[in-house]
Length: 204
Length: 293
Image 1 (cartoon, rainbow over the protein chains, first blue to last red):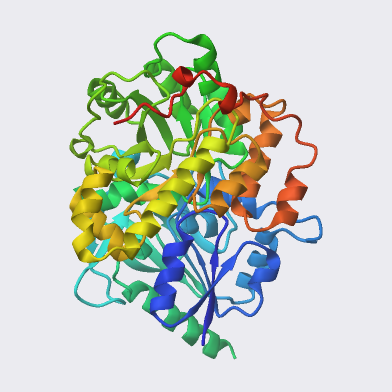
Image 2: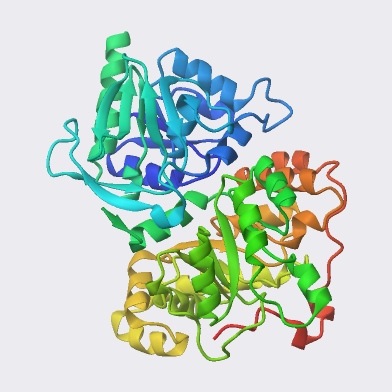
């Protein structure tokens, strides 16, 4: 059985874990460096990016030699497949338009936080995503970020009608501005699990 | 594109889970809260302990103050309206707050009815003491629930009582047979469809946080272990002797609520918690949690 980690510092990590379980993947909640052992992939969930970034920079226990953020960064740089949804995308980005928080710099994109505005501008929108196929995917955007700039080596996976990039990948790093974990449509999780497995095979 | 759907409104509460929502009365306090890792702030005129001390009528905060706080932080900003005061709620929506708390901490404007919350694009959180109250609020459109506890006391006893009552109520409903559900709905004073939903899923259809009297990292972890999906800390942060340290410690204890070693470590050297007021010694007329119908 495959084993995927879900960063469980704050946010909707239980929804991701539940989806993974529906797809017969074991979900490991990750709160401490030890929890990162032997994972086939990792999900950074939706939540508050400032809260998650703050907790990633802490040593949870005085016996930890490194912060969770440092451990996680080196594993992803070594090729651990990772997917960030919404706040997760902010955490994984190289650069933010805003001063805070400090992202981990693992995918060459620039992100604008709360790009649509406050909560009353949050919305649902059906998106056509070639990797997912038909029917269109109901994407839920909550105080969502968007990708405003990216390196040539980043592949766009989904755009809004006005052309705004809301999903992308670069090597082992996948990001979405929306929340597939809040739906009962498991196709995006299926796609991540398959692409993570393929990436691992290609590496070996 | 669809805005203000129930999915979108309850979705923001999903994003707050595992986090700490802190009461703040100034932009400076909001910044301290954000820096310490709060997942949202509640913009108030005064924290509940000061509302108790001041007496008189407690109302929605001054819009100037709410705007200052919204301008100071990037995390979601909530604000309180009085129970049943739908114009305060309209004003808060016009200001663009991210969540409205129709709260018993303020003086109720209507002693029979709550706000019909379905009509708003901004989501609502409401307090409850038991399942019936939670389902009445959800029926009116609340997209998030919090157990009430007794705000502004620093005494966690009511928060524990309300969370245990709610959890036990839910458990009991799951054991009922179909032909017992209507009478259960009648006794709870709750919409039948929601009672059926509880029977089928074994949980509330929206996120549930704990509130009212949480004053230490251990209090926060206690509520999480009792089944809260996150915590509101009102007076507990900014009435403690070192708010910055207390805020940091409560955030970490909420994340690591299952790990007593970490809770012990973060509880060291954080100064004195708020002095507190024992609910048992309180004049019953001063209880805020009984407000709500």
